[in-house]
Length: 286
Image: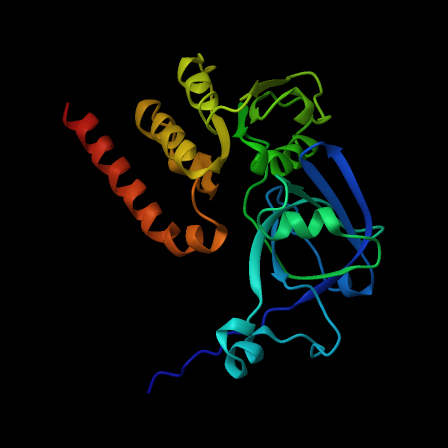
């Protein structure tokens, strides 16, 4: 008889809000600390992400908070809702975790919580996950995304190898949403301002019209799924970039909340990969 594996329980961390900042009009920065982060560590990747649990802690909640037990014992309507966010920064010395939230008014869940958060508020989460970090052996780096990818791109720039060459394309709503980034010599940043246009409507043509430098690149491309799909085809099919040199994924999708996007993401990815494989076969046959 095959022995059934028991999935280990995921650790639930509880952060206490230390500070809330507004680096730009539509970005809310929440800094978490406290004893509830005693077991939290990152692995050094720059796209670390956490799964935030909502609603936030309330009197009467079981401690330690056991999500698996709650799902086994309570109706679905009482299960916590998860939202995925990139770690903007983790300081192991002060044990403070920084998360940036894109805020578009009183819509959504996590960003609304962040905009209303005050010092002393608590927030639970799983994590971190993540796999990407700038490689030292690459000739140059390509970092591309919309506002949702800005925290990971900013973190990546802070860990670029000394003397590295990087080309950064960031599409944001307007000039007011620009952030200060680490840009040593060799790092070239292009800010693209949508001014109300559809997400990706500037980023996709900018990359298609750009002359890619020679050499071995490592690319990080994340953001709205439709935009990412077009850029993945450009990189994989048109330019022949090996899959192992790419970190590329849709963080979100227009017209879907995270629950809807996560429910359809696996099927979406399969469709993209099948389309890509067919296009690559066609190029070989030609």
